Structure formats: structure tokens, C-alpha cells
Length: 151
Image 1 (tube, rainbow, N blue to C red):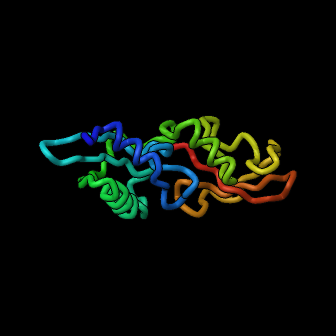
Image 2 (tube, rainbow, N blue to C red; image 1 turned 180 degrees about the vertical axis):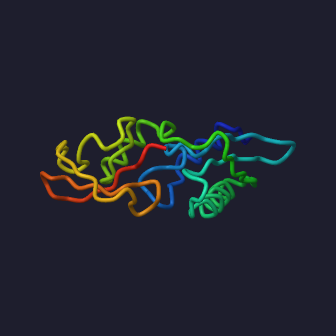
């Protein structure tokens, strides 16, 4: 079988983010480019922020996932342009909310509680379990939840 860039993207669509396993690296928008240079496949990855501790795990996971298909790949970190939450796919946003993480939006905070869908919310902390998320609480159901900050 002749491997194509599209086939590699399809395989990568099954690779979960190590910090949010319900969303794939493709849905998260961190897979920037897949190309063949001479006989070597290369995948460019933009971390969600430049100090992301999961960067090396993501690169290793990509290499392992593609090795299962007989593909050797070089994984390159790409910081420019910087990753933005605009790159999260619609299916990724829906999966985040179903998982209990409010998806990002341009207005600066979550629109609604991912559990009960109330709009009566309060921010508890600008930082959540990772620097790309903030901690919020719903005043209706009283449940805390994370919000994926706009970057």
C-alpha cells in the first residue's frame, strides 16, 4: 500500500491527546502538517503553548502510532504560527463539553456549564490542571469544571 499524507492524518485522528484523552491530536488542531521529504515522513506539531509538558509525550505517541502502520516519522515542533483554540475542530469542542470541559470561545469565559448547561457561572482560578485551562464553578449545580482558555 502506498502511504499518503491523508492516510497518515487519518491514522493520527485516532491518537488521543495525553492530557485530554477524549479528543484526538487532529481534533485539538496541534497536527499542523504532514509531508514526505525524500524518503522520510515528517509531522509538524504545534503545542498548545510553548511550555507544554506533554510535547515530548505527544511526539513519542505519534511515532509509536505510525510505527504500527510501518511508517517511520520525524516529529517537528512548530511554534510559528502559535497554536490557537480556533484550531480545535467542532467535533473536538463537542467532545470537550461532553467530557466536562467547557470549550473555548472568544468572549473570554465559558458560555455555560458543561454539566447542567446553566449560564450562572463564576471563575475560581485563572489556572486549572494545566496552564491552558481555567477553573470555574456553576452556581446552579455547584459543580466545578475546567474551561479551555482562548489562546
